Length: 114
Length: 112
Image (cartoon, each protein chain N blue to C red):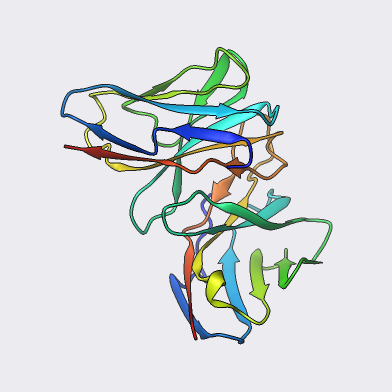
């Protein structure tokens, strides 16, 4: 199923604030999750991923949290910068069967003001 | 981007015309995917291919066709049967379903 729920289509923050983007997934069989960033007119870029045997993973200025109990995924961006302005998508691998593809959420547009 | 080349970047199609979008990769990835993105919308899967000479329909395959004759190439043809083809088309590759995708820079198709 497509990621729905707890979804805010837009998020506006001030430069320097921490941002939290939420995503809910509907397929309990999903065991791999990814966050992508898409700037206007470009293809999505990989930010960070997490597998279901973890509940937290940190990258550079980003942290992904996974709550399997409520099927919720979040992306935290520390000290948000204007260059972080983009659309952010979560993705899940679904039933994890051969011959399937990632399922993408609807996306959240992050706007960072100076 | 990152070893995936989509061409052309912009494409204009007349009514009733078939057009082909190119996607070439040098990442040695087995799997390739085509997604359609409409303004302000998420990604919808058109077709995907896990191995050479094999491909499967995605959620919105009607009006589209693909081929996978080489590992490096996965062209998408938008046929005249696709009544609303104006969109941003994204090609992606991966090692498989449990790995992240690498996306190309996209082709913007407009019907004139």
